[in-house]
Length: 102
Image (cartoon, rainbow, N blue to C red):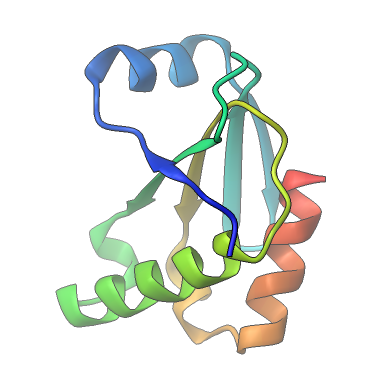
């Protein structure tokens, strides 16, 4: 499992919003900021339209597992999910994330 850090500071989220490159694949959106952070830093954004708190937390855990097995370039990432993401099978979720970070 590759090492990943969390994004915790407000400045990183502001930089992602201002300068990040956004790519959407199905219900997943990945925003990447090539700021050279090594190991990569990853944040997750799952809003209420995705489902209940239980559904959002389950999806967040699934996304973390997929990201841990995905090779990422140095930088900061924001993984966002829309309402359809919770219903994706494991392999479909992995495929969408791989396409979004490619």
